[in-house]
Structures are given as C-alpha cells and as structure tokens.
Image (cartoon, rainbow, N blue to C red):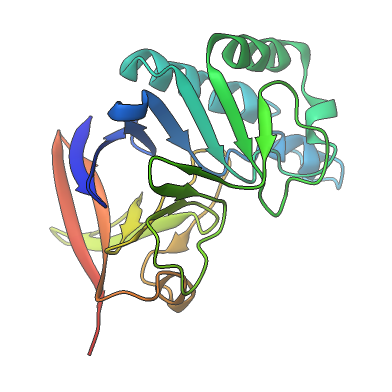
Length: 222
C-alpha cells in the first residue's frame, strides 16, 4: 500500500486500483461492472463468464490486506439493470459473504438501474468532509471522491509504451481507476477527464509502483 494525502486526509492506494481510508477503516472501489461478460454473451460476444468471481475475489483480497470494516463502491456496480439477477451461485455467495462481513455501501452510477443485492444503496454520500459520488461534478469545490472515467496512464519508459490504471487528482477532486476485471479505460489526460476535474490549478495522475507513489503532471492552469 502506498500512502498519500488528499484534502487533509491520509489515504493509501491499495491493491493497485483501490483506495483505503484508515480513519474511516474504509475501502473504496469504483466501477466493478459486475456481470459484464454475461451481458455481452446475450448479444453473441462470448467472453469467459468469470469476471464477477475475479472482481469479487480481488475485493475480498483488498479487504483482508487493509483490514477494512467498510466498503464503498463508487457506482457502475453492475454492468446493466439485470446484472444482479444473472450472478451465478458461486459469485452470488462471494458477494453475500462480503456484504455480511463489512458495512457495504453501493453508490449509484449511470449503469445502476436495477436491483442491488445486500448492503445499503445511496445516490451519493458525504463522510468526514469528503463527498463520495459516481461521477465528478464539474464546479464542485468540496473535496470529492468519484469514479466513472476508468482513467489509465499512458507513458513511454525505456522505449516501451506502458498503460496502467491510475488515479487522477487535483486539489479537491480524486477520480479512482476502475476496479472491475473487464473494464476498459480512458487516457487520464483526455479532455473529458480534465474538464471533470475543474476547477483546478493542476491535475496529476497517481500510480503506486513498488511501494512508491509516482505522480505524473497531466494539466496545469495557464
């Protein structure tokens, strides 16, 4: 885990694509997109139907690694409205165990139109001075944690092009990378992400590598 500060809070990048908030004993993940493979299978695109198992196993590992007592899922929890009803028994059991073992909160995203099993479902939440929502609100000046954009950092190192999920941060906004096993990504420097981070004096990508926090400038105010 890699520590860093945001809006006066000490946080840690955990499990590559999650965030741990020690003061709240909380694990935060975004964009699980559970049952994405089964959604595409309905339209003839056959993918291995185990993405929900893999995603939930990674959540369980992050809970064990951090000792989290609470889990906040920052929206786009299932890939579509019928996703929860398509969970196969093994994945359903994994999810039930996780929602029983922790104080589990589902924050609504644009994909979340159907039944959400277990835990507590809310539109957004304010906790200890931080607003938790799915999509960054342009013009928001209160400290905010969100997801939605699936940011990925694209860099060239030693002649090789490297693409990795990353967090994107400004003075008052932090966008988490997607946590789901089958989620794609958007260039962290994409104009849509930079616009979502406003107002900002600077926007950076954050990446945890070998226990170190790497920070890459994406945008600076003129």
